[in-house]
Image 1 (cartoon, one colour):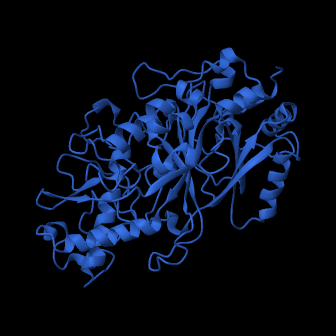
Image 2 (cartoon, rainbow, N blue to C red):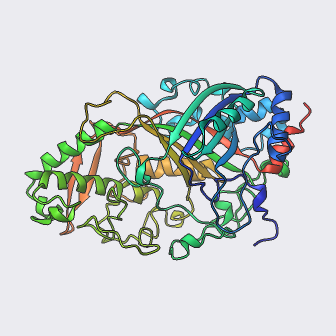
Image 3 (spheres, one colour):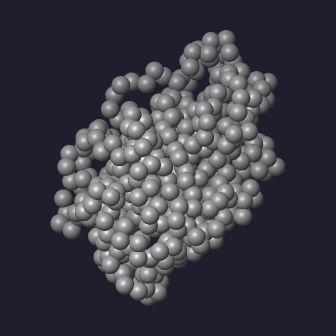
Length: 476
């Protein structure tokens, strides 16, 4: 362990996920600076039973987290409201100072996803000062979460509440198993991933003040050092998922493919039984092939790169789901979602960027249950993901991934000009995606809509515990 790294100064859920199944995000406005600072002081110190203690990273072995965890993120407007001086505010990166709403075009938030269409309170970004997150377990009484919320409301004005939950089998509403390939870090032991072949990331990938993937380069730490060191940036996103539209498109694409002259190179006759046991159901199997190639994984999590002709079963082998790479002969489309977001060691135009843009993803679903076999049941309900995308530099990591890789496709000339088929800002008139074939050819799909739309969000800074104490002592 490097000398300057004190894990217990770092907020929890950054370096290691909690694995709890419920979350309540409270969007807060500072309307009484004195009370807000007093709350932060107590939350950082854990000195009172009347204020929830901020959960921190532990230096102990990889163990289960507490059953109730609490963390905070502060926006640029929140730092201003808490009294950070203008000189210190100007040391924060431009994208954080401007905020997510003003950076919307950079990350693909236009049209229906534009900030003017965001839900309250995110359509008033100047009022979004903090996002307090309470994580809990379904077995715990909801009263505990409500007690924490009541304590917070004494110091802040709660202007928004968002509840999320983990879906069965770790899936999202599109039916994919999620959060399989997360970055791991130096000096943070995780024996459950001892067999992973992916590179171990330097702490500077997500924490300020440490080496990064770029040799000799550290991301700038805001001043004073007590405020910036051990902090991380977060893109908090409310992402609505068009589950009905997605399932309908899969059916339409499968119908089109059934009569395509090259369809047998996509799914050989009789191979339907290998696709979730769909013997005799060629249309259903083709739907799943399209879904798998769009994502880069079958919906059960099996990497398409490792198993392009079968969905499993998945071996109970540590590291199986993450130990693979891409090459020029890969069956996993270069335009697939997982390959765009994490090109691994595959050849890309920006060759030195392969692992430099790694982002920690923490998220839970929101909205009612979804039955893909009955699309009329609750079809008008909003469902989606409450996502946290953590990094040390929003511009060089989050925005670069969203702009260069997700929505422009700059990593490979074969996909430049096409957006991510799942996450991208697609329009039916211009969207396209190339399915790969066994003979090395391809079939181009067109005309799919945007399946994920932004409903709100904010760029926040996750201060260290010592930084939260520093904020509580400001006197201006």
